[in-house]
Image 1 (cartoon, rainbow, N blue to C red):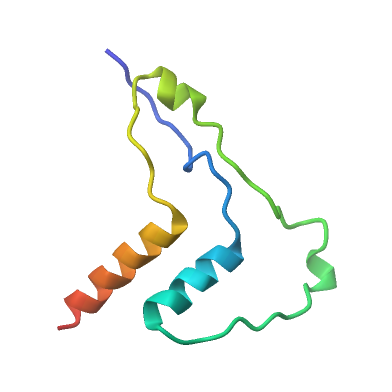
Image 2 (cartoon, rainbow, N blue to C red; image 1 turned 30 degrees about the vertical axis):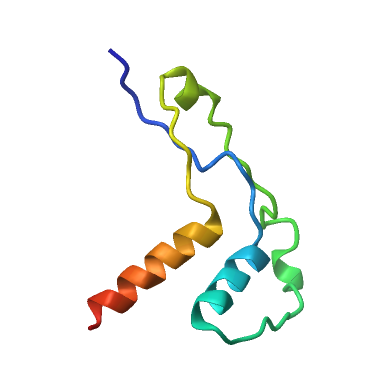
Length: 84
């Protein structure tokens, strides 16, 4: 009896550092190199987002979402297994 389109994420903000560290952890090597943010993009870049998933929960969806770390591992595991 519920229907709709829900534009959402996990409801939990995670950083690009967490994403990069998950990729490095999966590969077992690597390093993060920081570069200056381009001045011409200042004010045009949304540096923080966090989905409000309350409507999804109200609709009855109660399952947990994967963390960035879990999602990166699953994705890279899948990509790696498809190559072999």
